[in-house]
Length: 80
Image (cartoon, rainbow, N blue to C red; front, side):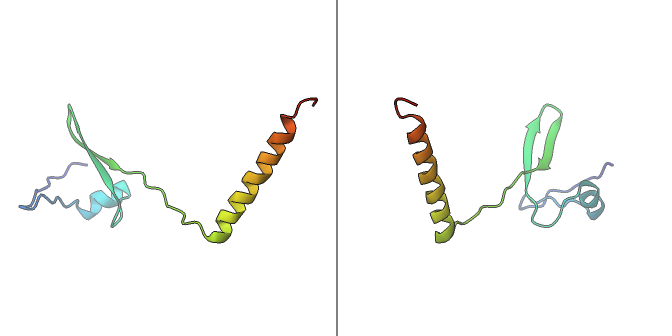
């Protein structure tokens, strides 16, 4: 599919609805713009959700780390 796009005075480019639908782009999706020898390449940016850890979750991490430290200490003791 080929479409002609216009760059606004502010530098904005609008992708027509049929092109967005064909590419699976939704509102607020992020794209990476890259210059290539063939021209401008637009591709989806991969974004990953960020987890904010609660105090309870941090305590779980600390407990697991302490348990691992104990196991490793036992394994590395001389005579075993």
